[in-house]
Length: 480
Image (cartoon, rainbow, N blue to C red; front, side):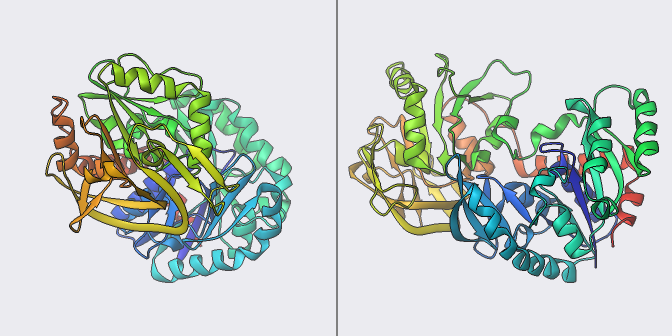
């Protein structure tokens, strides 16, 4: 029946992972725990048990708690569609698409559903661990805030502040946060954590004492860099990597400007016989690529234009001439066809975009969004698999006569006549060991990873890591 919030001195200071680790540590101490993030901004979403969607980081935190993801764990999800506008998802369902400058007017109406979801979680669990967004030091955004101190004050939830020493200037991060925020907001903070230290933490003793002296806040510890963080599902596409690996099946995933649900690559990156490259804008598709993945996108037509602007359409054509393979997932599936029509302006201005023409299919965008967990059988290998669908649009055409999968006896996806181009609306299928191993075997790669078991083991290791370097008991005792 208590709650504690972790806020950061900035974005990407490691809040998500610390919350996941503390969730697992609290569970191992015998507590019933749930994660919560009032507002998240991400196109990397997860399907929930109640038929909605939340940020992927909260799904990982739910796993750390031994819970199924639920929309109450992330009641406000912002999904960027353009540089200046985002889709607003409230308690799992889309309610609007607004420009950034108009979101400030909408925010005050969102505190009620945020507190509603938080109240249900708090009533059902011993402890709710809350993750902030960005930083409370962004005082220009304080009015109407639902993500940091606005939520903490409204819900009377104590705060622990997290600073990232790896990016430098951590003393200024923590002390400066106290300097710029409202004194009443500062009074919510019970102490601080220094995250991502490389080397001997004792070398920071003087800096640690300086922060304590300047702020009057208690320090709960210095967390060394957690080397196995890459084994957990990534919240940012840049976090997907295969460290120290320069051989094996080379899978190149295009990092589209509105890339969505890129966690499809996580299980592949774990396999010892595979190396995954997340290809940045301006980089050419390497000549040694074996498979090019066109991933999901929040804006299919917009990312088709982005793909062409990078010259990736030319690179993919050359890749195919070299005998390479292509896999299109969700939005990537739509891009592989002849055209993507959006007569109602579902993803922006109404119009039509020419696809890559590598599959004989076409797509029409519709207002209905398919959002469901899905069991299927891969036609090419006969392997059963479980994934999820999260898409708008209907795709038709002759190449669908060669389906990628069967879902309840119904054809799904499309495959080219030579079998080198595959496309599907199914996300998350590579998490299924049997399917992933069967798919890799076609490239003479022996799958070795038990993905779900490895994620569980890594969460346990993360909890042990925090127990070894933080006063976890004192952190949890701050909850109210």
